[in-house]
Every structure is written in structure tokens, then in C-alpha cells.
Length: 458
Image (cartoon, rainbow, N blue to C red; front, side, top):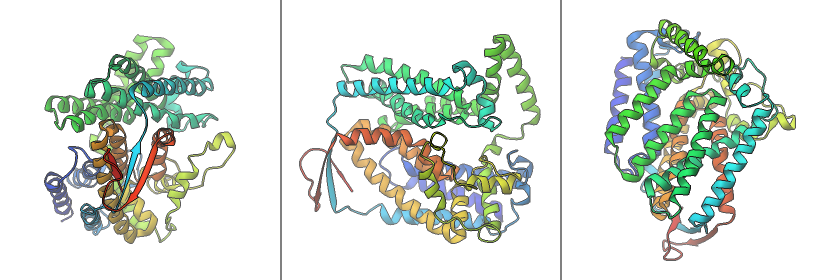
């Protein structure tokens, strides 16, 4: 019965995505549906069909939770229906106010801002790696640092600015490869390669497969949105890259330190050895998506019973943690959401196991919180679509910001941690603050636009 419910949900998601009207080929709800399908349809269906041994190694206690609550599939299905209800209720809402936005920027000024941002980012990079003793040593220690074997450093907060590079990468890609109209397009190409180099360095410093995957996939998504074409060849190539990197990316980063210490031959030997070990131990690629449904089961059993409800605490902590805590000597809040979730599923409090969106809402306010949260999240998706549609019609270059926000919205289904969303979007917040601080914004009541120039309505 549980398998039937999950498959029914999967069919519903596919049908809904193919039939609903949307402003772009890829919009916030498309990305939400994609990640929700992965973690709440594919993962639980695979676990039912092939067994609990597929559960991610980071959750050794997960087998004691999954499929122990017969109501979980119905709760997941109901949660998605509440999401759809929220989206459908708001999607036809017509705003009564409008505003005119003029950033007062031409290509020459934008080039200067991008160049300045690159200088600042590379300075921040120098500050960050200085604590490790240089770039090569920082890359060597990246895996130990990521796993928690090494303590956090004073200047870790500069990592939050690295996400600015994503905006630079996407915008320069847009100007050279998509718009192709600027008289400065060759300069944008140079800046694109600068951003690409920074991307590779940042990924090495964070030893992160996901970082690289999302950066490369984003270039494909921007092309799809702008040209309204899925480009089957590009899609297959992107999927092939993503699957390979999921399978071997972690091994690649783990072997990198041997390259810097002993050279190319040592790197190849270490990589080959780790591949052999991984092939013997690997259960399935699906294991990477099992955290959400297993975390939901754990939350349903414990939240509000032997673990206090968290209410809006994690949203408050997300804003508090934006501060450079290590530099200012501020202690982070104890037992954050991932600490609690990892404690239940691994036996120790650590920032490791993601709860997923449904787990987050259940930890906040049990099943009631899940239904309310999913309904509200659906309304947010509808409002974002309206805003994004108007922005894109006003200025095609806004596609960069629209995609980044759409990904953050959709990826929350996979992660379910407000702090990670704010931390990842810190660079975007900084960029928008800089751009809007010099912009002209006029607001007018009523249905008529303030003037005949491109306007945004809210």
C-alpha cells in the first residue's frame, strides 16, 4: 500500500508539472517538484523495493525509523496536496499596487562592478587560505575540514561572500553566450573565465560535489530559460556529468591532497584505490536522497513528544548565524535542527543529516506544522512566479537572480534547513543591496502603472 501511495504521488507530480501554466520552462515550482520527487517518491519507493540497506551511511539508525509508521505515505501525499492548494489559490491573484524600478546601470558600469567584485573576492580568498598557510595547504586539508576533523577558523565567514561569484559566473555567461549584444562582450568573456577559475578553487576548498554540480547545471538551466528550449543534447551531457560527479566527485576531492603532496602518480594511485573501495562498498546512488523521508519518520516519532517542538526557532537561528560568530566571539545556538536530526539518526549531535522540507515542518509543529508550512510554501511559489515573470519582461538580465532564487526555493525541499538557505544566498543579498541602494523606485496605488517604462508589480 505504501509503495502505491508513493507511486501515485509521483504520477501526480509529473502530471501537475506537465499541465500547469508556467512563465518559464524552469520556474521555482519546477525545481521544487524535481527535488520533492527525488526525496519523497524515488527514495522511499527504492527503499521499499530493495530494502533498508540503501539508507545513507550517515544514518545508521535510519533502519529503525523507515516504514515503521504506516501513515507516513499518506502524510507525504497530503503535504504535497496542501502545497498545490496554496499555489493554486494565489496564482491568479492580481496585485493592486505597482512599482517602477530603474537600476541606472549600463554595460560599462556593470563591467566595472563585476571587476571590482572579482578583486574583492580574490582578496577574501587570500585572507581565507592565509590561515591554512596558503592555497595548496587549504586544498589539502579541505576534506578533513569538511568532515569536522579540523576546528573552524576565524575567517570562515568570508566563505559566505564566495556565493557572489555564482552571480558573476551566471551574469557574464548570460552576456556573452545568451544575449550576445553588448559591445563589451569580449570583456564579459574574460570575466566569465575569471569567475570559472574562482568556482573551481572554491569547490576544491570546500571539497563539495554539490557546489560544482549546481554551478554547471545552472549554466544549462539559464540557457533553457532564456531560449525556451531544453536542448536534448545538452541535457544528456549535463545529466551524464552530474551522475559521474555524484559517483566519483567525493573520491576526486579526497585524492587531491596526494597530488599536492606527492605528485600526479600518487594522485592517480590514490584515486584508483579509492574507486575500487567505493565500488565494493557502494549500495546505490539513491542513498544520497534517502535522508528526507527517513528524517520525516524520525521527526514524526519524536517531535513534540520526547523532543520539544522547535516552532520558528530555526528561522531565528538562521539570521543570527549570518554574523561572523567566530570573529566576534559569539557562540552559535546549541542543538540546531541538523544537530537534533543527526543525533536521532546517527547517535551524535552533528551538523550532518539534512531533514528535508517535510521533516523541518514536523520538527517545528508536528503534522499540523507540515500542512500549514506546505500550504504557505505553495503560496510563496506562486508569488515568486508572478514577480519573476514581470522582472524578466522588464530586463532579460534578471534571469540570473531569478534562477538563483528559484533554485534556493526548490532545493529547500531537499535540505529543509533555513540557515543553509540564508547562508547560501548571502552573496545574493549583498549584491541586491548594492544594486538597489542606487536604484530609483517609485510606487503607485491602483492598477495603472506609474509610467510607460518597464515596471514591476507586487
